[in-house]
Image (cartoon, rainbow, N blue to C red; front, side, top):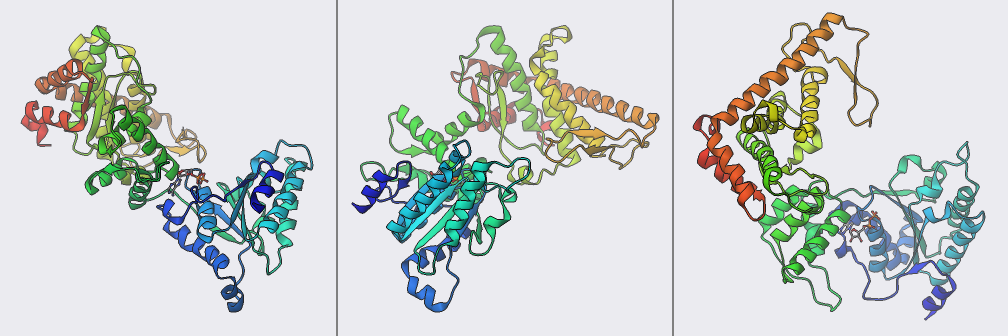
Length: 490
Ligand code: ADP
């Protein structure tokens, strides 16, 4: 009752007081380190005497740092849930555009309320909105006043106060040092996206969520399927995984099922990666797409260093209106961004396959603009091989990289350093790039011509199947059945 009254008084502040939406550590997965550190905060609420007796420093402010959607808010709520204390939250970004004084008075009210409800946790989301380094040209009075108020409230905590402030930020680097001084947010806990095992745990938490009627949702997946999913969902944050489970639930519902299966999740992922389906093409247009994708899927399958095909589709999708061959994710390669020469050369084959196929099927005069996207990729790969990676055999250059990154974070834009190079060298580089493209194109065309039987079988299946989509297994089956031995044995 006390809480409800207080809540009525303080509009805009959310309180946690019902049992049904109580969050506990069981609801948060894939962040074991953060949980262990936060157990101490829970302990402080549950056994305050022990804390004081042992002389341990009493936590005042805890800063959760990490990318969006990794569960920072969830963790803060779980601490409150585990400790059984009141939870008051506010989002700092709301203050930035407000009238001067509003933010500060809101903070004052919030702390007053927390003291009245103590023990309590105050959660300040997006604290960087007010906690950026103060002053300077970008000074913002409202922001500064809000931050000052927050700091002075925290400084006013006594040793017996039962209020802890938790804050979340995805940019620790921009925070005002005054915020992270001892006695303020002096515990910094990093919260990151889950790792391989963590993703499986997060999936299980969300798949087995308690429903409104109190029962748990049902799912039917083997451990092996979970492994496969975690492999495909790499670098997904907790929130992204939660979203995927949500879409999977909807897909199962469309099939009239309440039990979630592996297939629901892979379809949800497909939706996420490619975007929603659009109206499929028919006739000549449809065949064009099949000619492209069948060639790409075939060459991908025959290239040993390239990741296995996960699926190939000619159904136009929001992000890929011309169809797409999707490869399985290689976690290590994605993480390290390390590509061998051999891998890049094979990748070059795969992006040139569509154009080569078009030329074989329709003839040189009838090739189209359909594969522009892949030709741009081909140019990038060639440039990586010759220009930035220095993986060429040209005597003029040798293992000398002839480009420099323009700036970190500029999405790999490279600048060719011309000042320290003769025109002869530049010319040799240019010639080498052309040669590599041409030779590879010739190679991929010959490969398709050697494997016309497999190529036609793939085109046929793509255009005549109901779904205009083939799974990786279906592709491999057709290729193994029809491709020539020389290529299968690579
Ligand atoms: P953040 O505060 O880091 O931006 P949230 O805590 O708001 O992220 O996460 C949004 C939602 O995503 C959560 O409510 C939860 O459903 C899901 N989620 C995020 N991280 C996790 C996690 N580690 N374990 C379980 N669910 C998570």
